[in-house]
Length: 81
Image 1 (cartoon, one colour):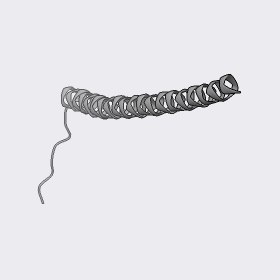
Image 2: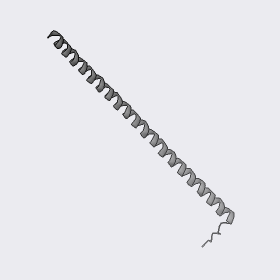
Image 3: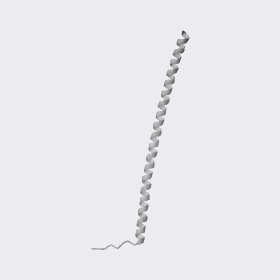
Image 4: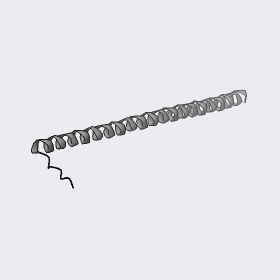
C-alpha cells in the first residue's frame, strides 16, 4: 500500500486560492445570466406596454370619431327642424 504525502502549506494555499477564483468566476457568470434575463424581461414588458398604449389610442380616436358623427347628425336634425 502506497502512502501519499500530505501537501505542503504552499500547495494548500494555492488550492484554496484556485477554489476561490473558480467560485468567483461561477458566481459572476450566473449573475451575468440573471442580468441578461432581467433585461430581456424588461424589454418584452416595454413592448407590451407600447402595444397596449397604441390600442388605447386607437380606441380613443374611434370613440371621438363616433361622438363627432353623432354630434354632426344631431346638428343636421336640429338645423332642419
